[in-house]
Length: 235
Image 1 (cartoon, rainbow, N blue to C red):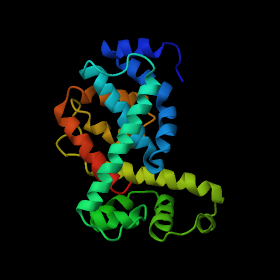
Image 2 (image 1 turned 60 degrees about the vertical axis):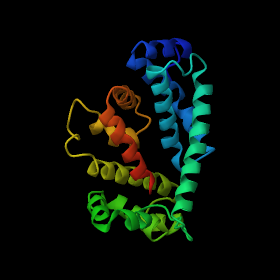
Image 3 (image 1 turned 90 degrees about the vertical axis):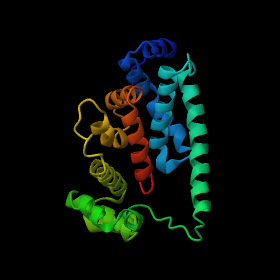
Image 4 (image 1 turned 180 degrees about the horizontal axis):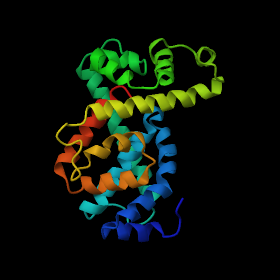
């Protein structure tokens, strides 16, 4: 936490172009935003909070709207509205495709049906063997946490943490693989930062750099939603 300047002061500095002021707002309110987002979309709480932060930042820096004080209250309203919109969009996609049965499995089993076995194998093979094992047991074979703990020789309460790290690692490498080749190493674009931005939302410095760049770069502002959409299909 970096509580020194008030929200009102920080927001004035953000409007004046101070990127670090935005990073301070992120540090002060991100954890609370994730907790609030968890009430609406538990499996995507970090994505939801990050999206809300991005929307508020764009309002503050590119329009005359947005909060002038009480940042957290405004952020919660954006989180709530974004969650409602995401749910409506998800329901529309299911209705539009006329799906009779929805595969609600989470992870690699669902990934394989959508993205292609070759791509999945390529990403999966780059992971540490321990991560590969926990992902396979949890997401493909749907093995219980107790059985996974016995297989890996760890305590049951350590399985969830290992699984989260493995999934984050898989997501990071998957996003890296899908970055536009012509942009991935360009220092004048933020694409190179998108994998970390989408998998490490608590990194305020990366978030500040990405969101600041998106306000002025049409290309990156177009690429990021596409990556979010692709990854949200199964992550």
